[in-house]
Image (cartoon, rainbow, N blue to C red; front, side, top):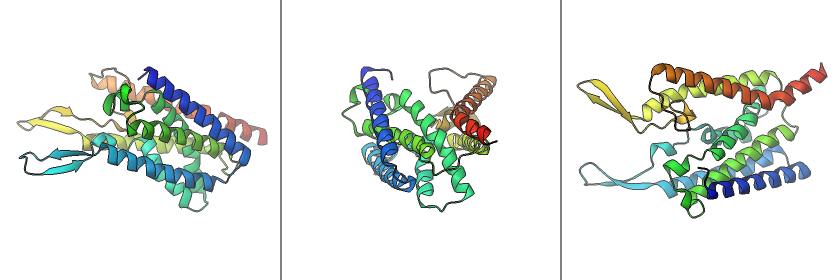
Length: 256
């Protein structure tokens, strides 16, 4: 994080976002066409991730060796879940719910991707900064999140989605539901250790949605620390999404 290679990748991602946004605004393809391209990028992204990160791991007795994908690579982070949402948006029919999904994607794809690019967890969990241009995961990570930013911006700029102030509430409701469910998912995927029937430790936390620990090195040692952390990220999420909805609020105010 914050290495020379990281900043080079950030510059590349910014250049791609600007170039793609200018191209889309100039040529005005349909949102369906853009979503089709995004579906292809999503498939390629997951294929690269799976086949570059699968490890051959022996069984406990050493008699068998199995291909294994570590739990932190499960597509359960906000940006990874967008894959399923992108496919839904592409192949579902126009409806109020369809518009709500697109309105949810508009801020969350951009915000989630920006946060991921600014604090790339792959440099601490998957590869080293020295592998930023030699490992397939670096290209998968940075280019996939760049695609999410381009898509989120075009959802608003394409003019095909009627994003309204009410969608701010539906967006926050979806975010809150996913974040709450991530607590179950993180516990389910963790490896607890019991001694005489008592829970003594937990290892290999997946930290989906960052609901278990901060993305930066801050220790949460008491339950009230965790409650305070949840309150902070809730306010932060609500405020950042509200910033993206300011043009929507202004547009609705002018109509009134």
